[in-house]
Length: 82
Image 1 (cartoon, rainbow, N blue to C red):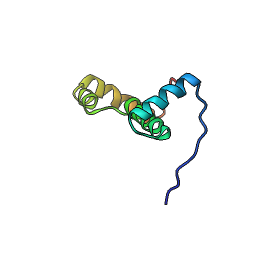
Image 2: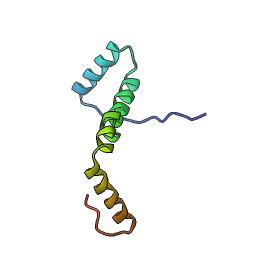
Image 3: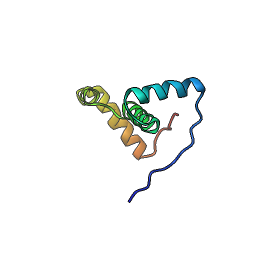
Image 4: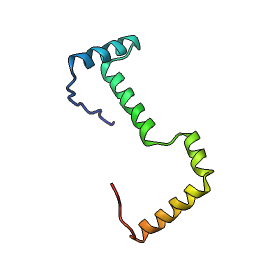
């Protein structure tokens, strides 16, 4: 059985009030609301949706650049820019 983790989160009074109200309105615990919102944000920001993937795979110029960059990275050519 996987145990859930406990964290401590510091919130301003204003943020706490907003989150508490939202949790009550959705009939959720505050922890569940924060987890749901955080995971939703990660999903939105880190992963491309079906529409975005379709645009990527139909853009031949972009695909050629990605392939070239992949090969250069594999050969350790060029440099990574952060």
